Amino acid sequence: MEGMFFSGWSTLFRTLVVGVLAYINLIVLLRVSGRRTLSKMNAFDLVVTVALGSTFATILLNRNVSLAQGTLALALLIGLQYLVTWSSVRAGWVRKAVTGEPALLLYQGQLLSGAMRAARVTEDEVRSAIRSSGSAAMDDVEAVILETDGSFSVVRAGSGDSRSSLSGVMTPGPREVEIESS
Image 1 (cartoon, rainbow, N blue to C red):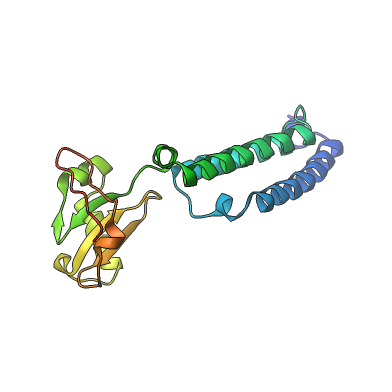
Image 2: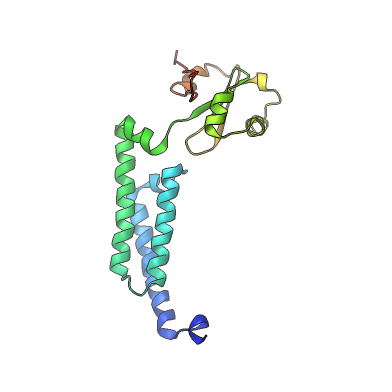
């Protein structure tokens, strides 16, 4: 019972020292890897962030993991994330594999039920996104897109050439509607 609440000053001291040093290492690695590592997250970025947190916790609490091992593990995760994001900027197939594609859920005031089903989005969620954008009617909206990070983008009708921002966005399913840029 004693070890459950307090296992000695040496373990607390180790956690304090290793925690501070691991934190400094993590900050340095994140700064070296660039802004993309800390950018708005898609599913891939979320997995890497959770893995970094888990690794950091392991460094702090597991006596069998040295600071050097933990720093290497953090560097490996950040390095792999950098490599994947670097590749995704240069190769479309990597980008699609890692982040997926945005899904068109509403086009010219019409809900695209097949796309909504495939994306597991309800009509209420689309309507909420429209309201959040400040639009009162679905007819005022050119398109609603489910972005790769899970957020909704609402493009208002009559806001210039909206098709250019919709280029490459398509609805998944049997009746695909691809928007061409003008």
